[in-house]
Image (cartoon, rainbow, N blue to C red; front, side, top):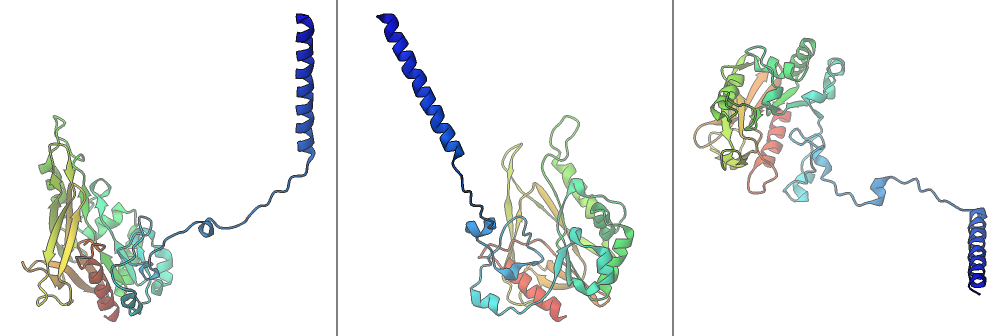
Amino acid sequence: MRYFISLLLSLLFLSGCASSQNSIEKELTNEVTLTIYNQPVEDLVSVQKGSDIFHKFPFIDEREFEVKGKFNPKFYQSINLTYNAKSIEDVNFWRLQKEPQSLDFIYIRPLWIKEYKRVSRDLFKNIAYSLNISAKEQEILRSWVKQGGVLWVEFGLFSTRYDIFNREGEIAAWRIRKNLYRAVGGMRFLHKPVTPYLFQAKKIDLINYMPSTKSFIIDQKASLIKGIKRLKLVIYNFMEIYPLIEGKKLIVDTRGRPLVTLLPYGRGYIVSLLPFEYSDVYYDGELLRWKLLLYLIKG
């Protein structure tokens, strides 16, 4: 009897397997219709973009974030500017030589101290060498400025707290400060001397530090660009140094320190400024750049 029941269960199991196999084979023989949608991803998701007016704006790095601006739409609608700008690392100098009108602004941003190479007492040559720009390309750049281009210099050097150690493996802050000053101190940018501005982040303990801010109150009577009241610099790294090129003082703070300078060079200009913060609505970093652009384009 037990043998009979086992045999019956085996037959039922095999029958079920055969039935399942037949069902699977039947499903496989059915025609499958596959629809392929050839549609860009941007159309399938909501992408929030900043205002088009910031495209190629000298202080904006579009690879990092979007900038919407702090003013109302009427302000941006009133700005009627047409210009082309590129970071110095992205410039095709051979094309620039043939088509000098293809760019209006070339801008230079800060470098990490480890990327900086000092090969002369000319800061212009040191920056070019550090960015792998050849002597011929430097010549093209200088010629382009002389023909009417604008070199927008927000250059500086920054260091983390861990770039320099002493023999015992301890952090040597004094040596970082000395190296930064030596990198730009006593330098000339082309034929003009530079004044270094050194800033340091807020130290928490022996190891850690946090960003700090430096505010500047503007002397509007002594400044050639009016309407700028306050500017802010955010020090994200342990130490940062910014060389300001000697020239016409466009913006001066209440202590008499120049914050934005302009150096005529042939028919063009070299504008020099600290990389002021521009998204904080309580400061005038963005407004400064719009006014500076208008000032330079009008000549």
